[in-house]
Length: 370
Image (cartoon, rainbow, N blue to C red; front, side, top):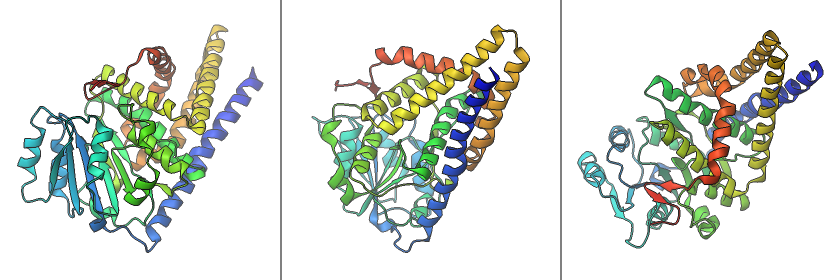
């Protein structure tokens, strides 16, 4: 048993250190180089595209962020995906004196993906930035874009923010995934992206986008765009400096949280990224192995030994994930890691049970339903 434990910890700790110790260090070195280059992106070359559908309860923070910005991009384009609430009125009320336009998606077209492409078709700038309608950002967000050197695709940080203590649990798994994704980018390449905060070279998008391969899937434009750019050997960069983060609220209920995660997992699996699939399988095996060891030790009444093993794993996780959590000032979520570790196997099991019965729904529409 001792040899099994030593083997498990050797594999686990070395893998995590590779991703979070070496990977994050390499990635943050890359990010410093992006700031040192002379071929900067000009804000006058950036259009912002914001698709929305019935966002009257969530769009105010975005509108306030735009109002308070030190600088604004060349174009602000809102694309209405057949809203039947007061979102359009709110935009008009809050953005007086600001140059923007609201486009309405043609009657025969539906969904975020088509709304984005409808907006992109009107862009006259070299770059476009996609934002979700429920995000907020700092007053120097737009001007910080001008610090970046030119590339085909920038994956910028999108962070969930909780308002109630229990919502910190809804933050943790996304922070963990983003930390590992950032480390992977330092070592090899990223495997996930968030359309809530993407900066794209339009010429590259026009050349590489393969919309027809996933048009039937209601969401997930971000992960498919990443796939298409990766397949084209485009220049893809992650940039995790906090001044370029956007924030949005966590899901408000367990049901909303599970639906969101199931939707993300479903689209990620459909992309068929072998690196992502391999890493997910490895994580599953390591998780099962670890908790099987704990169950075995407890069955032998080795409770003290099991507690020590659990504490060691949690200690390693907290130590290696701390720099990423601290980068975005999510220390309260980081402190929940010991409890999250206990809940994680049950959360995984619940996801596996629900996934075969899951029908993606986006803004009230099921897959394939207009």
